[in-house]
Length: 204
Image (cartoon, rainbow, N blue to C red):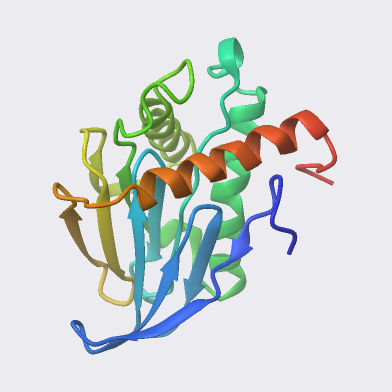
């Protein structure tokens, strides 16, 4: 898929995690991954949020990693650009899980991220907007939230085992470089320019 606009990309970064003795995949901003296998899904979050969603009966599960584009005054408008993008990012993952055989009635979600690490980058508190959106979306869609770790000021590393539902979250209080912030700032910029160009359609 294209690397711009509202097109979510399937995470390609597969590796073997020696610490957890498991096949793993690393999810970057704008990516998602869904699986039927017993494996580990890993992502690192600053202001972005991720939703770990699984069918608690079959163990089919997945994760996304997204940020709402800065939309100024219309961020709370359900038809606004940000809300439409966030809904799309969630639906891409949910639809992939259902295609794999997961049942929506069995879904549970665990959500993380939304830290205040991009303060000053945009007018609005990006992390707070992201956290508010994901909780509102799950409530509207009647998807049970089994756990959450949102807001605060520290980036997080999330380890999600969809087969069992186990999630390990590590607060990154001593980050020695700006790679997380820089990666999310670049992602935010891509979202902004995609909005300006208007060359990507959300829905058919």
